[in-house]
Image 1 (cartoon, one colour):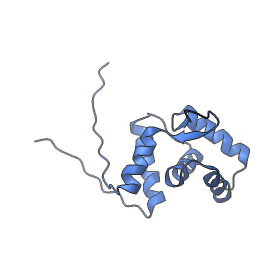
Image 2 (cartoon, helix red, strand yellow):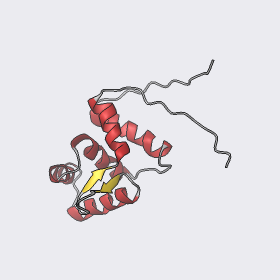
Image 3 (cartoon, rainbow, N blue to C red):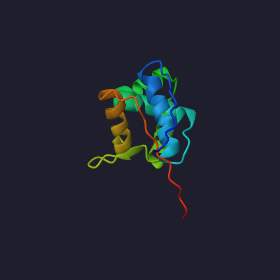
Length: 122
């Protein structure tokens, strides 16, 4: 019988849940940490989508200027969290993995995140 380590995590609301899932995802799948602003912005994009209205909300809520938001978006694209639209290179979309996170945790209301550790002997 395989043993499983279990750790219960409590969240306050959907934004807090997305934040916690995003932290786990960025470390386990991408082997990269998010800067605090990157994390805060991605939470908005996952919750509300990548669009003009969300960008305006981010600038208002996080007290950011457009140039700073654009710099962070560029960094998120370089890290693979945002991808250029297939038809319009100026437009960005969430990566497929982040779309799946949104679907799983916000739409389907899943509350378990399973991580399997494998030894990389290479």
